[in-house]
Amino acid sequence: MTTFARFLTPATLGERLLHINEGLRSSKGEPGRIEARHSACCRGFRPTNLPTHLVKKQPPARASVPPAPAPSPAERTSGEITFVSRRHLRFGWLALLVFLVLGAVLEALHAFKVPAYLNVTNSTRRLMWSLAHAHGTLLALVNLAFAASLSLMPDWKAHWRDIASVGLIGASLLLPTGFFLGGMTVHGGDPGVGILLVPLGAALLFGSVLLAGLAANSASTGGSQKGSVRKQKDLPQ
Image 1 (cartoon, rainbow, N blue to C red):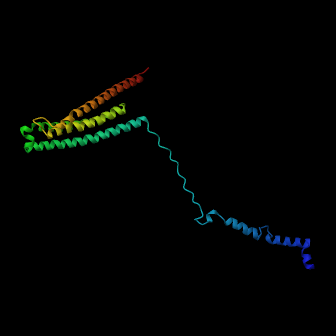
Image 2 (tube, rainbow, N blue to C red; image 1 turned 90 degrees about the vertical axis):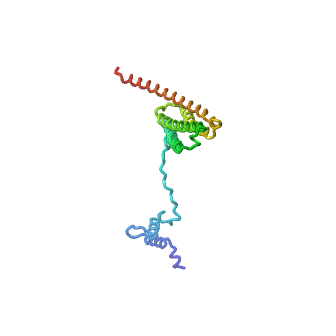
């Protein structure tokens, strides 16, 4: 009991606490074992040391792509003209091929003296098919000329240009088809009912040529006015 009471005296208790504190710290002022172990543990902990399934992967940053600028009116008009020109180029060359083949077939019928083509009673058929070949070939060339001239008329309004384009293609189909069908069945020297397509095709052709002529006239007038203004600006003051 006396020994336990001596251990609890303030002097003895203070010496014990001082001894424990000195044991935790080294004589050179280094941290004690417990503090050093705690520091080592803290230094060793990094988020990268975690297992891969616990580490949240950050998605790669996406580069901001600026929106494409809207095309200018001049670029839009140029694109529309290019589209219509290519359409007539394709149609014109294809139609020219078709009617050249038709011309070769008609020459073959004439060379082999085919009665259904050369008999006197079939003269109407021979005339109708010759007109179909001639009109088809001519309108194919007109389509090619239309495609080549569009770039020279950039101020032509789009809706009038589209009307003329559709009308020209329609005429190129209706006129030769009407002549050819009119020669398929002949009634007493008169062509068949297919000839009724010819007036409709002729009206479409007339309208398309009129619109193209007016556009070409306005384009040439506008170009001459711009040229005169440019020459006046170039003159010395």
